[in-house]
Amino acid sequence: MSEQKSKEVDLRCRNAGITMHLPLGHDGAVPPQLRPFESLDYLCELWDVLRQKLIDDKPIGLAASEAMQILLDQLMYHPEGEKLLTAMRQKQKINECKVDQVLTDAKAVKLGAGAIAELDPYETEARTLRRQKKRVQEFKDEQRAKDDRQYMLLGDTDPQG
Image 1 (cartoon, rainbow, N blue to C red):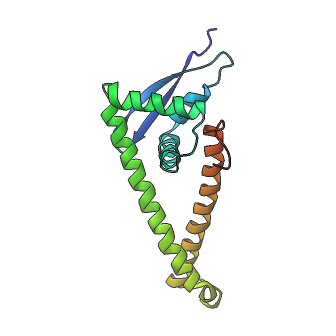
Image 2: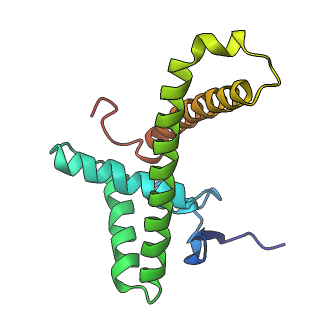
């Protein structure tokens, strides 16, 4: 029985993207500098966090720096780098639209918070407000998970920075 020497990941959004083969370390895990390549969401988070750190002139850890260098090499020199960039852009656009929708939902929920209890549970307005409230809560939960992932992905950076 042979050990798996690489992990295949599909970095796609809609019809754009690439499939990568990530080499595994001696312990069978993906090395820290390649963890962001496990999903398109992780790559977008890496891009956003490091961009903000550069803007704020804050230090970047070794694993995060190496991950960004690998990403830039993929985008510039890999024959399918443009497809990966397109997938990242599409994913960012989807995430931006999702944030806009959640902000709209949060406003509606805030304005109609008292009305939910007063409305007939089968009325369209009550159901709409409940769905909006649920989307806002799911978004908050996703943000907490995203923050945890950022510390995992960029674990060697300053947690306060």
